Length: 319
Image (cartoon, rainbow, N blue to C red; front, top):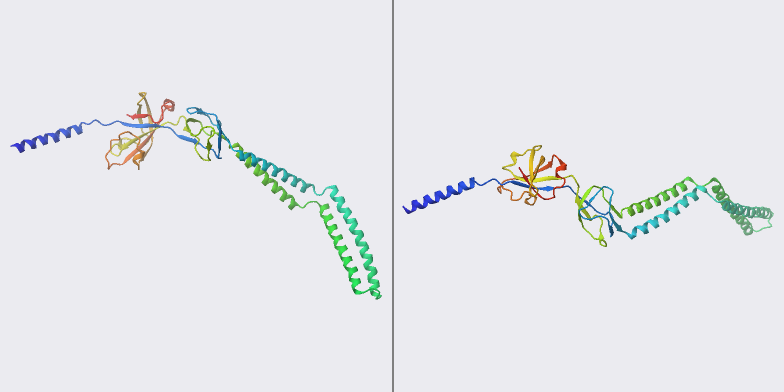
């Protein structure tokens, strides 16, 4: 009899618990407000000289956010300017050719060598006659002949040099000088571009959330110095278990409620994707079974102006 009573009580308890489980209210789906994030980083490593904005400030495209101190750039610009000036002078010299003074020097040299050649030629002619009459030894004859050949070679050399100068500079030399000038100008342009990179300029409209460094600190290239949100890019993320995802379809309009302001607005589902990691879950306390797949829906507001002031990461209930 006692066992029968215990079994009856146990059965009643199970039925009661089952009824309580079935009566458990369905938990609301609560997601998060998000905005597209953008960061501005310097291309050069330098010390922060000035910061022109503050956290919470809205900046526009082209606004100057900060100025870096990069002393190495000034040295590179000075070097590039010197190389450019020298290269331009080389190009001009190549195009102009020899100066009048250089021409006079070459003609004077030609005249002196011509006189030496004439004297050597006369001496050699006399030596030939004397050698033919056996009045000159072979060694002396060879000496006269060598002097004659040397004077002729020197005259030929100066004649060729003068002729080359009179014809003007070869186009290959001009092209070579122009190439060196272009290379120097490219180095100067590169230095000027680097100098402009000292200024960190906003490339997007942004609501600044975080300024990572203070004045005087070292900013390395690629380090995100300013981080914030792009205005009017609010969207909402909701985590939904597999058992409930069938109610939501891409392109569907849904109603949402901002918890802290009780402001209601509508939006459209633009994406549904499976979450592979528990860390990606957005909805607080998602009601799902361990064996279920978890999905995220992304909702954008139909009226962007209605959500412009909603705080990032605030809770939003999907109705």
